[in-house]
Image (tube, helix red, strand yellow):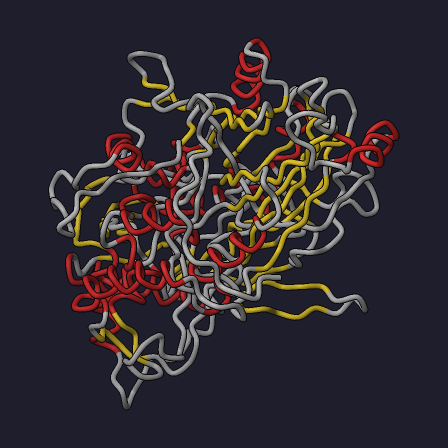
Length: 608
C-alpha cells in the first residue's frame, strides 16, 4: 500500500523495442496465484528468483505487469457510486471504499513499481471518450497528458476511442492542435508517448490496421509482446460517423494471427489487451473468481474469446464491461490462463507477475499470479497530477462552474430503471414538445448516462447545486435530441430489442419518459421478457397501427446499442444537443427553494 507520494520521474524510455502493437481490456478481480514449477523453484533457490542480471543471470525473471482499463478521462475522483468499489471482508460481509482519481492512481502505481526493475504498464482501452468536462471539453488532451505522466507503456483502443473518428484518434496518438478549435494552451499538444494498438481495426480501402497491431517491450534480453484489439461489435455502439471507413474484425482470429507473427520474430511471451469483457459472479473486486471451478466466476463474451485464443498468448487484460475480476479460464489446450479486468474510472489497478523463462523466452504459465488493488484516496496526491488538474481546471472553470439546477438528494443511475434515467428521458420529452407539440414520449439508452447527480457539492457551488460540469459528466457525448415517427408495433419491437438479438445476453433497458409503462418479466427469455400487452402510454394500450412521435438522442435514433428498429423511424427532426435539453429542464423545473426530487423509477414493472 503506497504511503508516500513519489515525485514525477523523468519518463523511463522502456520503448527500446520496436513499436509494434498491443491491445488490452482490463476490468477488476480476485486474487489468483500458483506456484512456480519445481524447476523454477530450484533455480530460484540457487540464484535468487527473478533478480539476476548480467553474468550468472537467473533463468527465471519476474516481470511486473501493471494494468487498468476504461479510464474515460476521469482525472478527478469520480463522484457517487462511480467513485467507489466493493470489498468482501474475511467474514463474508462487504464494505465500500472511495476510490479513483489520477492524483492517487499515480501515487499507487509509482509505489507498486518500487523494487521492480522489470515493470511494464498496459491498459485495455477506453482511456478517453465519455469523459468528464475537465478532459472532455478539451477533446481529451488532458487525459492523454495524464497517461503520459502515469508512464503508461501501451494500450489497446476501445470503442470510445472512436467517438470522434479515426482522424481524431490519430491526432491523440501523434499530437497537434485540434483541427477546428486550435490549441488550448500556448504549447502544442504532443500526443501520446505510448502506442495505441488496433490490430483488428482496418481501413476499408487499404485493408490494413489503422494503428500498430502489436508492440514489444524489451529489457536486458527479456521480450514481451502485446497485441491490442477492441470488440468486434464496436460499430454497434459508436456513431456511424465515428467508424466511417473502418472495419472491425474478429478478436480471436486477429490475436491468433499476430501471435503467430510475434512467434516468428522470436517473441514467445505474449499478452493480449482486449477491449471486451465479462460479468463476474460478485460485485466485490476481491472475490475468489476461481471458486468453485476455473471460469465459473465470470460469464459473458470474454469467456468464449479466452477459450479460443491460442495458447501462445500467456495472459489477457480485458475491459469494456467496467467490472472487476481476476480469473483463470482454460485456453484451447485446457490449461488455465489469467484473465483480468480493473473495473473503470481509475478505481483499481491490476498487478500481475509474469515469470519469464530466459531459456525458452516464454512465460512459465503455472507461476502467473495476479490481483486487483484499490486506488484508495488515503495516500498523498501526486504533485505533478495536481498541477495538471489545476492547469486544465482553470481553463474549464468559467464554463463548468455555472449552476444549471438544483436537486434535493442524490439522483442515481443504478438499477434496471434508474431515477436519473427517468429524469433524462423526461428532459428529452420536454425538449421534444418545444420542437413539436405532438411529441408523445422519449427513450434514453442507459449506456449514455455516465455518472450520477450527487447532492454533495463537488466544489464551491454548495450542496444540491447542479453545475454545467456535473451535467457534462452525466451526458458528455454531444448527441442531438432527434424526433422520429414510429408505429405502435415498431415501439413494441424496440422494447423487445432491449432483451433480444445482440442485447439478449446483456440487456440494455431503455429509460422511458413519464406516461410510458410496461412489465419486464425476467423469468422468461429473449423477446418474451417484454410483456407486449402490458405496454401503456398515459394509461392506454399502444395502437399497433397508430403513429407516435418519439424523442431520443441521435445515437439511439440511428439504431445504436442494438436497436435497429429505431433507425427505421420517419420524419426525422434534428434538435439541439442532449446536454442542452437536460440543462433547460433542470433550470426550468428547479430552484434553490424548490429542488427536483429523484424520480420514483416506477415506470417499468420488473418481475424476477
